[in-house]
Length: 76
Image (tube, rainbow, N blue to C red):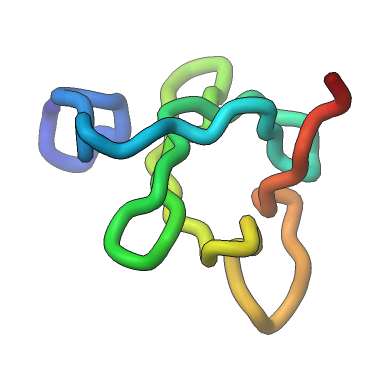
């Protein structure tokens, strides 16, 4: 991984199960979401790159307000 680049490198926490069936509130795809040091860690798939994100366990980016980057379950 290049410093300052958010593209995924080696898989983080290989022993932890991944959480599937999620998207952001804005509808962006997410991948490699898993529990990581008391938070959720994963990537938002953007057209030109992947953005590394950390969410609270409830899928919110911050407790203060809702954002378009918050996680939501997708209909199955």
